[in-house]
Amino acid sequence: MTIRVAAIEVSHWHALHDAAYLPHLIAMPDVELVAIQDSDVGLVARRAAEVGSPPTFTDYRQMLATTRPDFVVALGRHRLMAGIAHDLLDQGYPFLMEKPMGINAAEVEAVAAKAARLDAFVAVPLAQRYTPFATRARELLAVGRFGPLSHIYVRINRPGPARYQTWDCAWMLDPAEAGGGCLRATDPRRDCQKSAMKTHERWHRWRDRRAHTSFELGATA
Image (cartoon, rainbow, N blue to C red; front, side, top):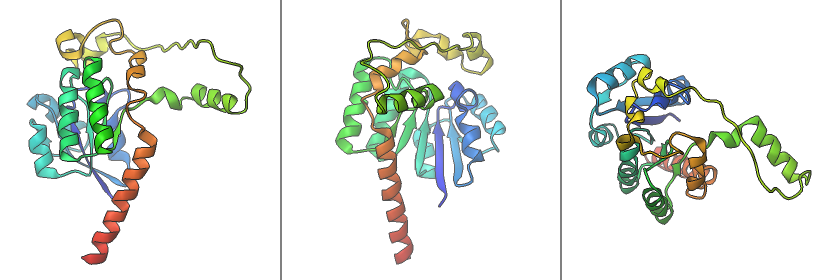
């Protein structure tokens, strides 16, 4: 069963770098990247050329109406994220959206509340939960090897801000586009989203519903 995926606002550096969603998607045998979108027509053409030249759009609503994907990867400028998330929820699309999903707590909480009310599938990638360190820590906790935890220290070494311009993502350096403050583009902002989505559980529920729907459609066709 092929999952048809569309990507929104691919100026985000994770489209091709770091998480590199688009290269990973086109490498999956059961995924078809049906379209990508960005408001910058030149940028979206460059991104498409890197990933097999899927159809490109500058308006994500037009892309969704034209392609009707099964799943959406939503990236983009942080100031646009909450609005995009509400649009996807209102239209019933299951989606993954990069952090921070808004530029303040109120925006993120509103998305989380709507997702819970609609029982929708919405994923926020929290990659540090799946590192060898975190996996080992959970194993030790499960068998009682640790006493009560009083604090935790985590260090993550990342490249400098010059990478954003190199990766066609200069907006990340503009607080009006990306938000601001000491936690901009750092992993501690994940804490405001930890309780927002039960990603793993809802993923399986969505896949189960989708498989059941596909079976019913095949049986009646």
